Amino acid sequence: ASEFKKDTKTFQSKKGEVIETKKQGSKKCEDVFAAAMHQSKEDQDKSKIYYLTSRNLDEKKLKEREKKQSYIPVDFEDKLKKLKEKEQREREKEEKRLKKLETKKAKLEETQKKKEEKKMLLEKLKKEAEEKKLLKKEAKKVEEKKRKKLEAKQARLEAKQKKKEEKEALVKTLVKEAEEKKQLKKNEKHMESEEVKADDLPSSIVTKKEQTFVDDDVIKVLLMTDDLLGNLPEEVIDKFAQSEDFKLYEKVISKYKTK
Image (cartoon, rainbow, N blue to C red):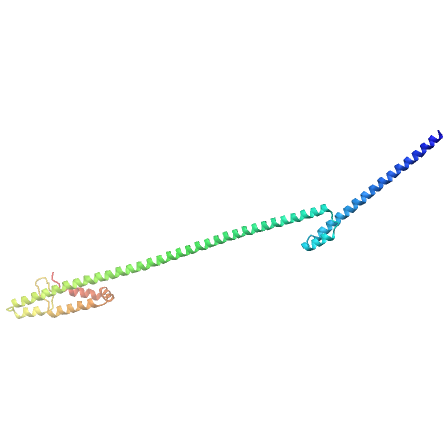
């Protein structure tokens, strides 16, 4: 019984040692695991620092650093690759966006240019229309002035023609009277000398009581006067027709007309 108790104590003692040994081993594993985790965390931190510092370097330097930093975990290399691919996609996306904006800007500039050209064309057409309208108005004024001038000239020509016709009629009348006078002179050779003298006086053709005859010299003077008036400029004739002398001229002409 005493040996059994001894063995039991020995067993319990060994069991305690084993348990203690197991506890110590477990603690060591935990320490090793914690140290590994800590080391892994430090490696990851270093990798992140490396990534951040080497991000803006060119590809050649980046490759050299990647070769030197062999401790970078494989999963981080994958992440780095994915990040690069993402950056590439973002760059391409940004380039497309910028290109699209440039295209849109070019279209807007082209549209604005067309609007300005259209505006300038409309202003030019409007200006040309106004100039044509002004020219048409000026041409109308010139035409109206020309028409009035032609009408005035036509009126002067008609007045001149009328005067010419009146002069011709007067000449015919005077010639007729002269012929009648000659004929009457032949038939009145036996009249008294006073009556003959009376015939030589430049008196009116028509009187209240008796008819007398115009002297040949008076007829010549009247014909010369009409010829001179007919050859004068229209302005002089118009001025003469509006003067008091013309009234006297008409009075003398009408004095030798037969009724």
